[in-house]
Length: 198
Image (cartoon, rainbow, N blue to C red; front, side):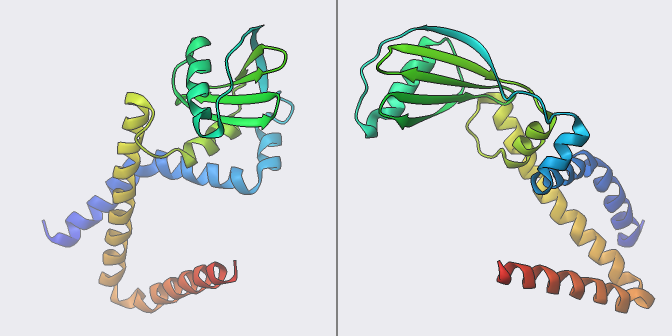
């Protein structure tokens, strides 16, 4: 088997392996750009973002701003939740804690003056799920999140290999080099022009 034969097979089968990832990133990119249209197509336009989980009395001392995330950790534990979290002070009376795992998001609202804690789960929406997968990054969410980060790294390297094998195949077709060059230049010029105009 020559290198050209190997390269063609490599390109074909790597493309098939990467196909689910290409579809996910393609669909999620369309969802980012055309969110309203996608929500209508997917039937998620009228889905309420949050559903009540519980409401209970709660009292915790409010720390200084630099220790606010510690309070978020305490509220999360007291609510019986696990996962990553972010803590934000909505106003003097309200502190929000957003707890999220790979497949679930919960918001906790602590009303300081009323000594009250409300928890709400995020309703599943396919459009939000797609954009969430697109932007998910880092080794921070336990085994499943770490596995996702490893796979995304492998997919990124695979995409570079797929591009390189495609360029090699194009270069071997001497009669098509000029057409490929036009395509490369058109893509590069349009990309660079948009980047520098943004």
